[in-house]
Image (cartoon, rainbow, N blue to C red):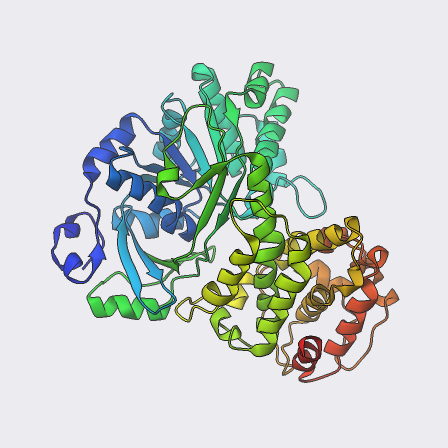
Length: 534
């Protein structure tokens, strides 16, 4: 059982319980070539098992007759190693909490290309697609970092500075410089309408797309590379930047899943690790639960994704759903487990959910501290959402998700996942000092930056753009030595990390108290955690 177009005709797939596409794939590819409707940037695992599957549902039901044109603007090896060798097919493996798995071949990707000027045929194809009036939407799963034009110090990345000076389509070093150029070509061809839809798990994601595109366009206008009409086009009702909320836990390809597939006779189970440290494979494994809520603002029409389970609603409701999930019902719980899981030497989130202290911690953060100020979007019940997270999703023993993966970029996550709850307490007159779970997470993250687990053995912290900064600011931390508020005052006042000035809010004393408990010695993480939740 090899994953390619030729071998899909084999009866062995059905015999082993694999669903294979029933639609005419060659016709779909032909239709997409002529009249592309959907471009997606970000060829990683979340796209392959979620948006690509949504398109597959519509193709199977006859509600869509074109596929997705995929572009990768950062890690080109994903295309050359995980797409092209398998004819743009992906084996979707859904890991259910009851131990069963669903296996389906996803075939909705019509084309896949590296998106960079040095790949000239692919570059020309993107221009052709963007110039086609049939194109309705461009979506993105490029991670929150992908939208940044500036570094943590607020300085413009040098590659963007060079793209500003070179003008449209010249250097094109960065993804959004390329996108802006493609939009310029669309404008010049006929100023056709288009929706630019971020599907990344970050707050106000559509706003990030809009800001990046317009910043580049205005920089080019100032230098005389484009006319004002292009800038006006990007601000007109012909170009939209819908906000969205996405939720689906998608770990790296797992060896235990690969072993199950090998027993079936599936041959393409090797994990691919690119030079840029992307972990991928011919298969993608993920949980069954998934949510996608999108602002319904598509000036050129859109696929009927509501028929595949997508919620289409207003921007206000999307924002409420996103706040509900990111600030209360899932992301804070995930981060608390990630940081403490690393400190307590866990390697699976599901294993952490057998730890009574950790479960009590996230219940406190979610139910006790979060729900009193949760934003209720109306279309999804917050209490039921947390119930599903704690009772079904996180304990799923067949989900090979790791605290190390979730701990990536923690400094970028703390202000939204916890800072917003603190702000809500302040604005509603609630007692901020009662947020002991959140204070503990802040303290445990500072303890985490020491790269020593609870047994005082070293570990490698997950990638984080502010890790070096944090380690420098917290260089005074030593096991067995107490710190004062004054010792780490600069860190405690950092609103970029915590979302608020912890000293001004009155939570700093509690954070320092927990931090000193965590620094007492070997086993102090467990001791402190237990004392908090007992």
